[in-house]
Amino acid sequence: MPTPDFILALRDKVGTDLLWLTGVTAVVRNDRGEVLLGRRADNGQWALVSGILEPGEQPAVGLAREIEEETGVVARIEALTSVWTLPEQGYPNGDRAQYLDLCFLARHLSGEARVNDDESLEVGWFAVDALPEPLMDRARVRLERALAFDGTTWFDTDEPTSAAGTTGDPYAAVPGPGDPARRPLATLPAGAGEVVLRRAVRTDVPAIVNLLADDEIGAGREDGHDLTGYLAAFDAIDADRGHVLVVLESGDTVVGTMQLTFLPGLSRGGAWRSQVEAVRVAASQRGHGLGEAMLRWGIEESRRRGCAVVQLTTDKRRTDAQRFYVERLGFARSHEGLKLALGDPGSPGGE
Image (tube, rainbow, N blue to C red; front, side, top):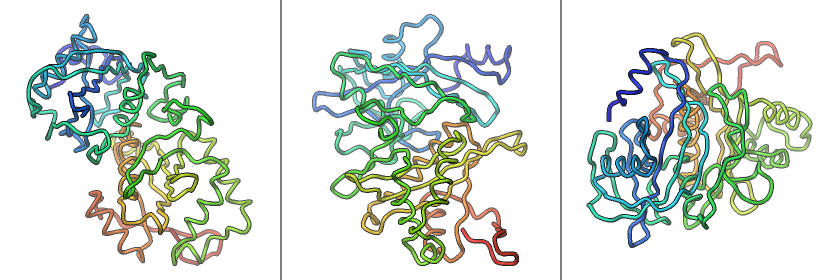
C-alpha cells in the first residue's frame, strides 16, 4: 500500500521531521481460535494486521478497513486490549515518525484469508501454539496482551525511547508480576518447550561468562573465577541505553546471550547502525534454532531503533558461524574486519 496522501502532504511541509501518527492493530480470531497473520513484504516477517488511521477516521472503522484491504477478511472489532506509544521510528530516507498504537481484539465474520494488496507476501490463520517464524517481536507482545485480555485494557507506563535510545527504557515492555527487568521481550520455541528472551540483570553475569567460555576460543580467554571486571562492564552496559544485553532463559537457567550496541555515525547520511557482539547458545539448547531466533529479534530491534545497518565480526576460526550468518540470516561478506589488541602490544586481536 502506498504512503497515505495526507502523510505525503505533511511531508511536503515538514520534510523528514518527526510525525505523530495513530496506528491500529488487530488480533483477529476465527471460530477455531486461530489468529490472522500476514508475512510482510518489507521485511519477510510475520505480523498482525495493522495500519495508520486517516484524519478524522474512527479507530474501529479504520481497523476494519485495514483488515479487509490487506487480507480480504471481514471482521467485527470487539475490544480495545492495549494502548501504548511506540518508540520513534526512523526510515532509510531520513523520515521520522512515532505512533500511538491501539490494539484490538476482532472476530472473523466472513471472507477467505488471502493476499489482497502489495503489503503481504502470505496471509493465513494460525493456532496460537503453532505460530509461524520469523514472527515480529512486537506482534508477540500484542498477542500476549490480547490473549490475556480480561476486560481491562493494558496501558504502558514506561517512557518511550527515541531512535537513539537516549531516553526511557523500552525493554520492560511486557506487563507482569515481579521484577520489570525480567519481563520477557519475546518467547522463542525450543524443541518441545519455550525459552524467554529478556534483558540481562546483574545476577546473570556468572552464567553469561560461562557461556562466553564454553567453546575452544572462549575457554582460553574468559575467567569465571574473578567476576570483578565482568561486573564493572555489566554496570556500564546496563547504564547506557545505547547498549542492550539480553539472555535466553529456560526455566531458571540462562541458556543464551547476545549484546547489541547502537552507534551514531556521519556516513550514509548520518545513519545509525547496530553492532552485534557475543552471540552464544548453551550446548544443551543448540539445534533448536534459538541462535537464529535471537539474532532475528536483534535485527528487528535494530530496525525499530532506526538503524540502517546491522554489523558484526566473528573470529575467522568460527567457520560454521560465518556460514550461518551468511546463509541463514543474509549477512554479506562485504568488509574485511581488523582488530588490534591493546593489552599486549603486537599481539593479534580477539573476537
